[in-house]
Image (cartoon, rainbow, N blue to C red; front, side, top):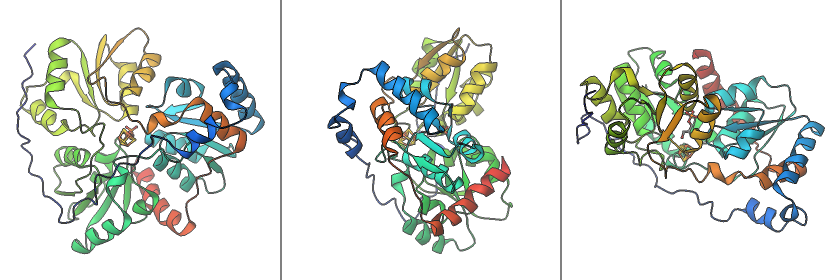
Length: 360
Ligand code: 13P
Ligand code: SF4
């Protein structure tokens, strides 16, 4: 096998938007209200893990609730969920469930998407402060200002955005369908892609379309560097590489792929759901996983006979890990915290989400 050597410079031309992201203001989850509530609860601190699980099992039946969990959730939460998936799959599951109560174990924008798609259901999130550093890089007002500069622009908003940002968009997309969504937009249209610049660069490369990019990033994925990939590929020369398109090095890796410096047949850019499908089908015994480490639990369950190596063992999303067993129990017991989106915003956001769901 040839050794992968990646170019040091990002070779893709990026047009910087004139409006810069409001800040890199990351929501803090150090001591959330939900955390304090479970600690001071008269019952919860005295329950063992087994008792919590038993009560959760009882309540989910009694309330006819469905538990949805993202692939980055803590193993215990994934194991309890009715369905574990990527952002697109979770939206689709929410849209089709008959259960009157959805407990969404993921981050807030995901639960909001479920609430938008299921206006007649009650959607709960065990900790509403489970935010997202990427979603926090853009506000609805900033989208409106950006649109003013590109009056004919078509706005494609990654699902990692707040509901009022989605309401300003023409299309929503997730990491598993961003390329298809952009391909569905007429060639003569200018595209404003937000908020993830690395996913946007990847889509630009895959579609050949000229895309205006919002310069947002996820603090977990931005930390993946080309040298992390190179070192991992050196250490495991026969492994398949699974790369999330939010990773900071995705453009360099695409360039290296095109140059033949990364093996075409063993390098795969996938959403978290795409990674699951890949390991089910691939014959590779080892997979290098370049995304948040919660993914490893999911992949091991899918293919227990295979080996999964995290490219970056400290790639941990603290927002996803904010959802814990005691909080899940409290959420079901007290029916907290309900996620509601004002109807005027939900209606406009739903239009962008529905347009995405029509494409995939
Ligand atoms: P997926 O849609 O691939 O699950 O990604 C969601 C996310 O938040 C990645 O950080
Ligand atoms: Fe947001 Fe990044 Fe966490 Fe995904 S991993 S939820 S993009 S902060």
